[in-house]
Image (cartoon, rainbow, N blue to C red; front, side, top):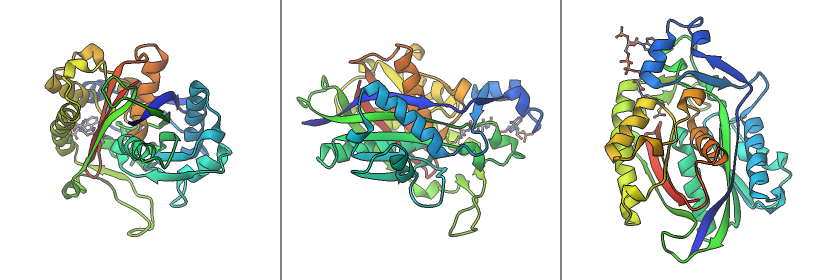
Length: 323
Ligand code: ACO
């Protein structure tokens, strides 16, 4: 059995950090409201002239360094983003050029907050089918560029950043003891495309547009769908929730994270939460959280890590991997 092993992680956050107190000078909100409803205390904001590809390249370089792999070995780049540098070409192609990679192929994946799970699944399928050997999977966003800074219901929730993982093909026995991605599951339900969307785009308005969201509706779908997709992942490999060492969820909101953890019956100390200092970085949130927990020594080689996310589409999914 070919497995996609996670051989390195990296991440990058823009320098500028915007606190709730600073936000309260821009819109009618308070630190107390934001912390109580979301758990968010601050978020990073990309500098003027700092693009999604800039964040992605830095995260990718750190992941390659951690893996001890030269960029020239990479034959596949899958980049999840909702905030590409340009309408086209793919931001992945810009990253490929910036890393000096001239072989293989590079593509973007658009699944908003579920983007990293989608990208990981796409890359895993390329590796398992033999079409790629060494893949760079990146989630990168300058999501704050999509915000309506007069809408307090959305502008307090998001931040910018990037995270990356290097995947390498390796031979496994086919058991759940193998290191690497064990299973991924993707879902979408376009009937809900209008509860979370951006009101612009090249085909409709020729503008970029701003994020619009029915927060309560999204919340309701999130907890139900995330718990279901985790159950699906565990039953696919016949493992109980106790086999999971770390849950690394999409970081949208602490209440969604805690609600899902509770529904699944996983101990809170096994859940990686970074939403307090990163806010919701969309496709970047899982690889940012993963990298933080790998670097601070929580996630160790051999640990079983379960990742899950949901976002606009609605699109959601999970990935189960032994690190
Ligand atoms: N500061 C102060 N008051 C606010 C703010 C704010 N930033 N935003 C909204 N309010 C007010 C509203 O105007 C409303 O006032 P009203 O009662 O006088 O009308 C009141 O707070 C309650 O608003 P609700 O939207 O009902 O608040 P709710 O408890 O649902 O919390 C929130 C809002 C935090 C957005 C919540 O619905 C949520 O977390 N939803 C999930 C959405 C999410 O995480 N989306 C991220 C993208 S999708 C994803 O990644 C999963």
